[in-house]
Length: 147
Image (cartoon, rainbow, N blue to C red):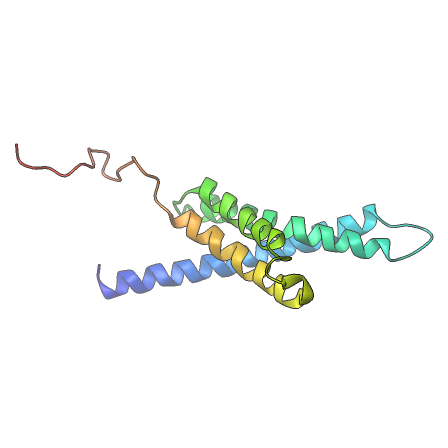
């Protein structure tokens, strides 16, 4: 690979990372506002906070998966939608599941920063993975021995 091809791939990777993080933030905000309205109580305002947190936890990784889908369809950039969506959702789920053993629940700022960074990062890595068993040239991907 030449240097311009490598730099172009790096620029595409970083731009995809930023674009799906922004889409994830928009969907996370919308899910947080929806969660706050659904759990709103007339007696106390603290139930809205639980809705906001639940909406962000669910909305951000799903927004990142939707961002990967939009990046694929709008810009016609080829990749694995399945691996990207699963990677973005599982990255957040693993971090939330490992919050107690890793003591991330003692520092919620660090937990949110890790979710915001790893969800699009793992989703982008998953999107760029090649599927096994499907060669790009349409032929046999085994090594030719000349026999």
